[in-house]
Image (cartoon, rainbow, N blue to C red):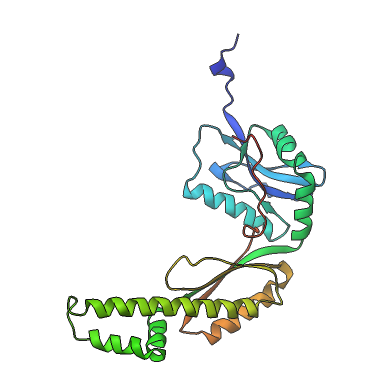
Length: 258
């Protein structure tokens, strides 16, 4: 008779996201832990999955990149509903029953709304010297504080430096709000949805996620190119995407997952 240790399950199925059932994955596509990516279907919807040892801990930077790279690669050619990182089920049957069958209507509706669309991230970062000069030119108090500390030692100018730092910080917050609003307005005709993200760096000028038609990416790039020209030397602009629509629709983790 087999012992419980011998019959203990050693593998599971990692689930990346939900796609239409007719999506085809490249034969050489790899996922977390270099797992071979496969498609588990249920009616008109499907899940992107790969095998995974249940003893393998998740959360390494490479795991997160593999998860995102797979979903973002699909997002450029088909609608994809991402699952949050770390969804693991026991086998393909569980994927069909506990995930696809249990949420079939919800997933189908979400995929219809995403048809032809993907997420793009617009990032801008202030050029430090340029934004500081702009603030000093516009704020007499900041300019006066800068002159006050110019020839003072660190100890002698401590209070003035702290006051200047606070003025600059508050000015950047105000400029970020204004510049973000300008970006959102510029993208109004292209974005189906917009999510203004919280800044991740004190010199961040803008970070906006938008849901847009993949076919209009050239128009999106043109709008941002014009903004970048207007802000040349002041803000460094970047466009990321197409990506899976993480900011707008994320599938729930299945109940009872590993």
